[in-house]
Length: 154
Image (cartoon, rainbow, N blue to C red; front, top):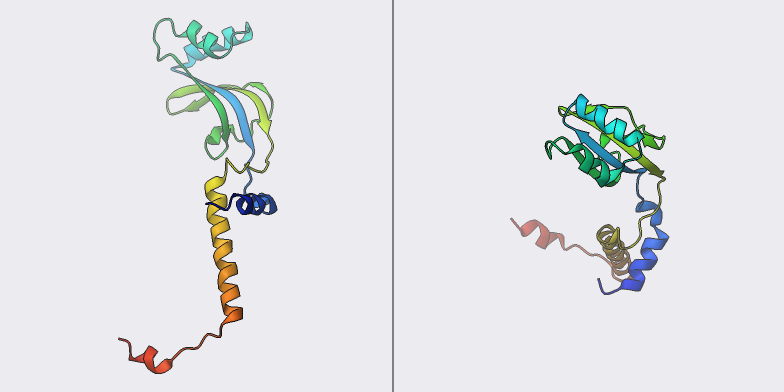
């Protein structure tokens, strides 16, 4: 943990092991039913986005429309896989709700920064240091097994 330069050098030398998958930057609108989805799509076409759209649709009930903004992998949100064209998707049915995805961009795979992958990099770096240390010890010292003692242990 204290060897920050060694950790950074290890991460840089092995950055292909610490990559983001393809990610999707999007707004995901969850509609209570097809009627709410239709209203949402109409307001979207008029230029409303994000929280403005949420406010306009949720006049009767705060449960009519939900908004989830962020960047996800297809593993986190499986319904995003296969979406590649920016803009609003067709309606998607999921868990009794109608989803619409406003895809902003598809982010290509790229290496994670050290801050994003610190835990994984630290664990891998410690494993590498341990392997190197054991290799060094084996080269420096001969391994001898006292078989009499070994077989006397029960």
